[in-house]
Length: 301
Image (cartoon, rainbow, N blue to C red; front, side, top):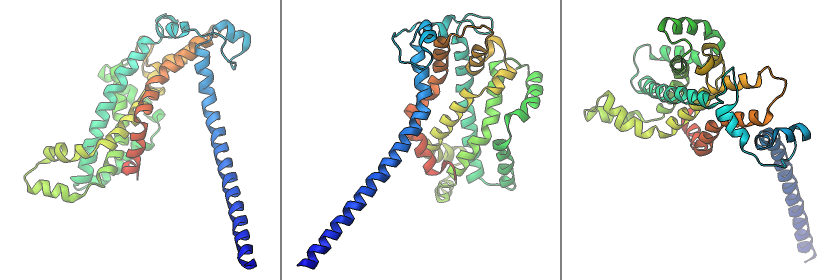
């Protein structure tokens, strides 16, 4: 009996030590996660709070301070009346420019990438692997290298200083990524489905519409989110190839922060930054879980 009681006491002590160790481990892990989350979220929180504060309050209490007032005037000024680059129309024109650039470029590049991925994975031909390798080079080529070629192309096409020129750039620049995503995803689709459809008399387009597209929802969501956020947040091409009223919102934000005035309207700047960040945030808010799901189902291998 004494031995049994001793064993039970030792087991209880070991369980207590293990539970305590497990608690400390979880405490350290969650503590580090909270610290990292705070590092990322505090700057965003500061921007959000400053967008609702009065400029005089910001000047008096500093940028990092809890708001003592709640004002929406900065949002209205940032949207429609604040002076940027010599015009006092706010961010609305640049916001619409970004929409006119991002939406068609995302749709076209995703559609072409899906078609390329379908061909390179299910309709292989001699040299298809070499072609795919060449297309992958676009993933690794930085945008700065392509500035001169794009300047020559846009000039000859008459698309300089035009939103349509930016659409063309982002479609071509994005095809490498969308082709990579879709091709790697379509490789996981069984070839027997394609062979059976061919035996039944289905052709190239019918197989694509009836078999491939219904199975493509995860990867298409991935490519749409990837392309939309990348194109919307892109700055280099927008500031190099457009000016004035044709610039996207990223270039306008830089022009806003680089204004020559000595007095900084931090409330308006904060509101303008949030206006520019709102569409990508909404995309990830409503489609983030589908983005992760699509990646885990073979978008990147």
